[in-house]
Length: 202
Image (spheres, rainbow, N blue to C red):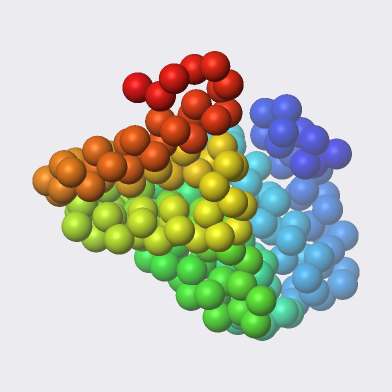
């Protein structure tokens, strides 16, 4: 019910549900995975309602609980770091956002079987954060890695790959690599034409 409330953009109902669920989860102990998961969900509800202070505190509590219950290298730890990154971006705190995305990547890349889709997402998030800071030379290789990782995970025909191609070409232009940007733009145009039969690439 709480997750449904979040999906329907009803953060007050979600908060009420998750605050009740948290009281129940505490009965299992503050290091139980259920307790950590509920904190993370409650943080999302606070964030959606605009209460960033409570959201940050709940995410940080969830992070500590997941580390205690599941270990520092558990995927759930990366998930909370990614959520914290999104919160910091929304707050305009890009330095801490970049730090959070780096932490998420460290956890994901250290896994025995790395989740390439999630790695690509966090590479993109980190690249976008640097781009918003005007750190184009830091963003460029990350956009490239995000593109390569996404292609590896999903194949060249996945729609998200076109978005990655666009981002990469834009950052190439921003750093003055016009010819490379034009080459990537042609690849993106071909991919679009494959997804829209009958339309010639520009």
